[in-house]
Length: 115
Length: 113
Image (cartoon, rainbow over all chains, first blue to last red; front, side):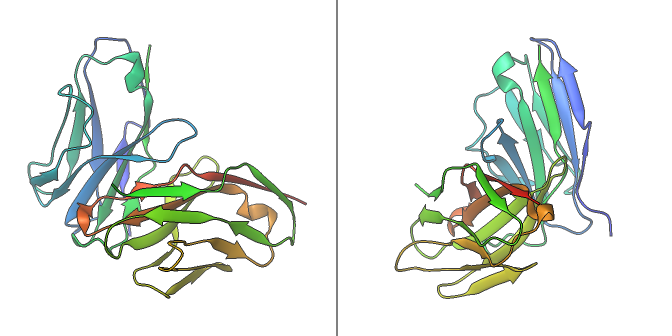
């Protein structure tokens, strides 16, 4: 079946612009996660949802970052007034359930470059 | 808080050599442990996992055993191939921190023919 998809795959924007990154999880997956990965580093947690409810947003670096999953499926990560330090790979993952033993399946990522 | 420490890379081996990538962790309780792999130009894929102490995860000739006493989850393969060249990430998920994954820094493996 179809895996996790993310769009766009690459995004180049100018400092100060807003960007919206989209994640389409595997059909039927309850949980959806956002991570950010700097070059040469492991992914770092940003936020996650169970169904449409945002369970934990403690990893969002500041209030320019927000995420939503209004119908419990597709999610959007929005970054307002982008800065150069926001440049990174943004990864989305989904899992069938909400348990800490469950496997998270990752999408291909969105490479964000802020000029 | 939870943390994962991987051996520093990069690691370069010849084909058919034995591979070990060390991973140790700090977490409260009994976390689940994972190895993810990122092949060039691709996303993260689960390689194997273990959810309780003494469990052994295995896949594609790779193995890792959940050692509670040494808080380790070292990745091993008896004979690597050129196609194993990738970045390997050790990660944990703990009940005390929801379902989030905490990753190590990653280890770049290059296998030469």
